[in-house]
Figure 1 (cartoon, rainbow, N blue to C red):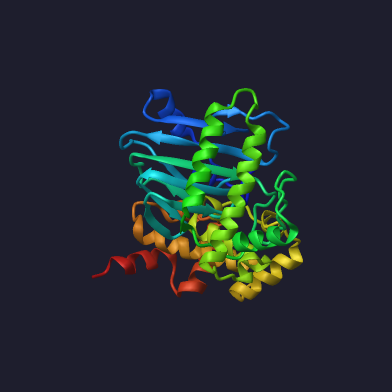
Figure 2: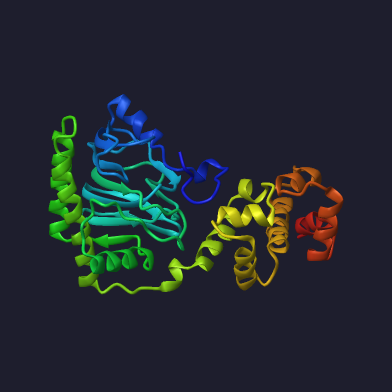
Length: 337
C-alpha cells in the first residue's frame, strides 16, 4: 500500500484500510456494496477494469453505529455523496454534519474522517480514483477511460486542485447519477457492468464540472504549488509527535515532499525564515516545552527523546537558547501561581 502523501509513521496518518467498516459489515451492523482494489472492502475489480478506481460503492446503515473512520488519507481523489441520513465529517480543520444531498471532495493530501467518533444512520456513496498524485504540486494523470475534452479536463483538474472547499450541495443530476452508479455496482457480476460504470463515472465528472461552473468557484493557484507541499509537510510534523521525533535529514525531508534538497531548502526558508534543520529543532523545542508543563511526571530525559533529540546536553543547550532557562527551570516556572 502506497502512503498517501509522506512516509507515515503514526496510526492517524495511514492510508485508509476501512478496518472499522469491514468489522461492522462482518457483524451485520451495516450493509456494504462496493467494487474495490487493494485494501478496500468489496467485490474485487478485474485488473483491467476501470484503471485507477480504488473503490466505488455505498454503505447503508439503518441505525446509529458504534464505529467511524478515524483520521486518514486516501490514495486518490475521493468523492462522497450522502443520499439519506446524517453523519459527522471533517477535513483538516473543517468540521461539519453532512445532510442529504451533500457532496464531499477530499484530495490525497487532505486528512479527513467520517464520524465523530461514530457514524449515524445513513446511506453514503463514494468513489476513490487514483490520479497519480500524493502532493499538491504534482501533475494529475487521469485514466484513459475518462473521455472529457482536453479543455474540460483542464478546467476540472484546476477546480479540484486549486480549490479545497470540502463540502458542496449536489445537484439533482449528481444525486441521480450516484444512484445509478450504486445500482450498477450492486448488480455487477464478473464485470458485466463495467461499460455502464465507465459511462456513469464519465457523466459524474461532467456533472461535477458543471456544478463548479454554476457555483463559480474561486481558484487559488498557490494551493497547487510546490510551496504548498512543503507547507503541508511542516504542518504534519508540528501536529504529529511521532513524525516530529523521526530521524530526519534535509534529504529525507525533501524526499517525503517529492523534491530535491535545493528546492526543499528554498521553500522551507520562504515559509519559516530558517533552514530546515533549524526549523525542525524549533518545532521539537516547542513540543518539548508543551510536554514539560503538561506532563510533569515525565523526566526531562524522556521528554528529550520523545521530541526527537538524541543528546540531552544538545537539547538543554538549544532549549536554554530558545527559552532563556533550563528545561527543569522552565517546568518549575510553569507551576508557580
